[in-house]
Length: 289
Picture (tube, helix red, strand yellow):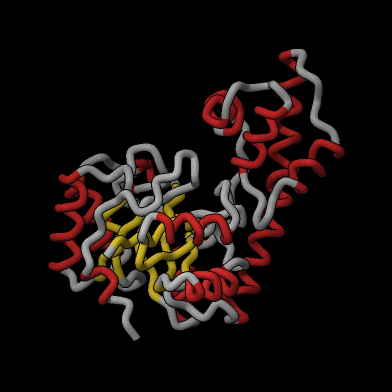
C-alpha cells in the first residue's frame, strides 16, 4: 500500500485544492492519506468525503506549530517545532476555536511583517506595500495566512525571483513571533478531540525541526525523552528529507519507548511528490479503529 500522511493543500501553503490532491492521490495509487494543513482543519470534512468516494482510506490531519524550549540548548530560548495531529474529530469545538484564534493571529502577524518589510523597502528604494497589497495577499489565501503567501506576492510584484529568495532576503530577518502554542496545550487539544499527536520531521535539515537545537540524533532523542514523551503519541520517521540514518534512529527510538510511527512526503505540490516516500504498511495498521 502507498501511504502519505503529510500533505498540504491551499488551506495552508500548498498549491493544490483538496479536490486536486485527492485526484492526484488516486492517479498515484495512494491507498491511505491525510491532508495536514498548518494550523487549519477547515478542509477535513470535504477531504473525508472526497477520499471516500475515490476509494482512498483517509485519516484527519493537522500540522501544529509549537513553541518549545530546552534549558540545555539554544541558550534556553524558544524555537518552533511542528507536530502532526491525526484521527481527531474534525468538528471538535475546542480544537476548532483555538485554530480560529490562531488564524486571526496570523492575519495580525502578517500585517506587522508587512510593516517591517516596508521599513526595509524604504531604505532600498522599493515601493512600499499598501493596504491594497495586503488585501490582494489575503484574497490569495484559501485557509490560513502565512509567510509563504507573502513570499509569493513579493515574487508576483517582481521584488524577488522566487519564494526562497523572499525568505532568505526578507522574511527571516523581518519576522514577527508566531502564536505561542505550547506542546502541553497542543497535546491536550488533539487528544481531547480523540486524536493522536506526533513530532513531525524531527531531523529535517531544512525545516522546522530539532536540528535548530542540535544536529546530533542521540541528543535529539534525549530531548524528546526528557521533555516530550508524556505529551506525544508518536514520531514521524519517514519524510522526504529524512535520510536512512535518521529514519532508522527514530524507528528504533519509537520502539524502545512504545511510540507510534508515521510518515509522508510533506508535499506542497512544488514539485508533486505525493506518495514518493516509502512508508511501510504497518503504519496504516496503527490507525485502525
